[in-house]
Length: 380
Image (tube, rainbow, N blue to C red):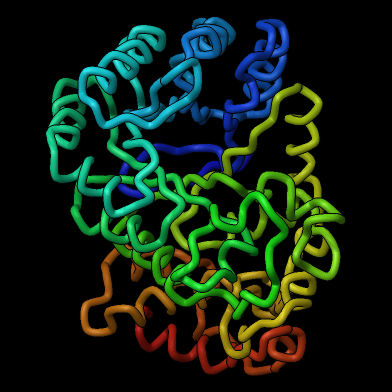
């Protein structure tokens, strides 16, 4: 397992986490074998948004004394209505279900997530009511370690981050969603084939969201990495051919501020299959040729695919381009953390020998040599 720091939380989490949704309604033996396999492979972050008591208790029981070794991402506002999972802002219901979650997981939730903030109404009912006060009291009381939120909506996520309340967020990231225009809502296209005529290349506003998160040290955990399986399906993929699981994982992990992808494994074998990511070559993880098969406006924009490497000077070109893009957001006030990240690189932009091998391999015409010099000037 490889571990990354989850933004300003300071928590070191595995780049592959376990999204536990599909353990709901499964027998305890299956939950235990899945949890055991995850722990044996170094997984240390579990998303438990599900509000029903049985699955929560099964996961806690499977963890046992190992609870102290993992981070639980638990959701505030995830409730049950008429035996179905539901979203609630009614404080009596919110407290009932979250305090049940606290009891089950030893009185502490590492990442307290304000659940499903997708619309303007969601935003107002969370940030302009006692809901936000309750969340802050949970943190002050030591019941949660950090405040986060989950969202699938670009505009609402941006607005939530700007409040200064969250330390991190869970967001839906995959190549198809990132190519939808910012005015489109991902769930409008989720239950049907993605319409490729919508795609206009990587949406600059979504790219700006990830850069903003990096700038403000808002760590991201990722949901919908595989687009509910559609991106790896020959029938539903919007691309020339399906992406592999590894390519989807690698794409999400290449976005700024992303610390972990929360994969919805429901068996030990699915966990083991996901862990094959760590044995794969860079060529096997490369997604650039597939996402460039649809109508796009990628020209000149780095998508952090690392197709340009290896560099003879051993520069991590994608990382340099990533930090440069974030610096360009506020060129007169570059965050010290971005400078520090750049300066911690073993090989920096000033080591570029202008051989041009990177630009010859780049599928998107990025002016890499120019960017290396610019990065050194801005960040060196």
